[in-house]
Image 1 (tube, rainbow, N blue to C red):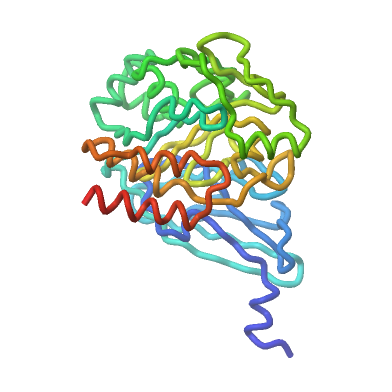
Image 2 (tube, one colour):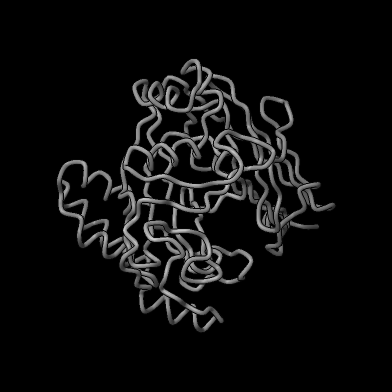
Length: 332
């Protein structure tokens, strides 16, 4: 007879954004769910069920690491139930999820070209989706009302608009609102590309992994996919994770940290376990320091040292945490 502890050890494990007790500020959310068997391997999505208030959540995308689901919440309390079974052992987790549509949504945004020595294209900023900004965005994108725009609002809109108000333009395929053919940003124009220098520690990692580095862009003033290496392009992280859905399917929630980054190695230089396998550097969380930089810049506190730390490839978590302590003290 197995003990309770032995049974628990053999049950699937379920990890979700709901574990953090997040309050959602949009009724729509596309979120990643990680389900693994007792050996640590991803459990097939066919062996997982997800419901919201008794209704099945639909799958947006499924890969070898995680499955993203489309959630639709009602105002107030919602019950999310996730059931996973490997055939013999079953795990059920129930969450009470709060959706507060009256709560303001503020997203921390940064657009980074650390990999080519340009630094921030858009330095960290807290972008509030308040009535003024939503009204301006609705007009900019040709919607007839703010309410109509809010029904279509995606993180792709936020990215495009933040670039626009900072004097940049992007080229992309697909659409800014959710669509069958997704969204992919291929370039940003208006960037000073007169001086490209890949950090030494990144050059070493690239060359060790078979990349040829050519510090030249195809078009002056534009940073585009396939510039500098054959594995380059734009990728985005939200809350220290690379979503497996296109940006047009991600709905902004209050407290999100969106970091858009230029990769030179299909994400392996940025910490992604993607097509190149193991990341080049230790996985670290730059979000807390990014949020502090946004706060410090807003009130005029010097951020030079913090930016040096957050932009360094191969930085350790201890070094990032120490920089957070230092910057928080300066803010205080």
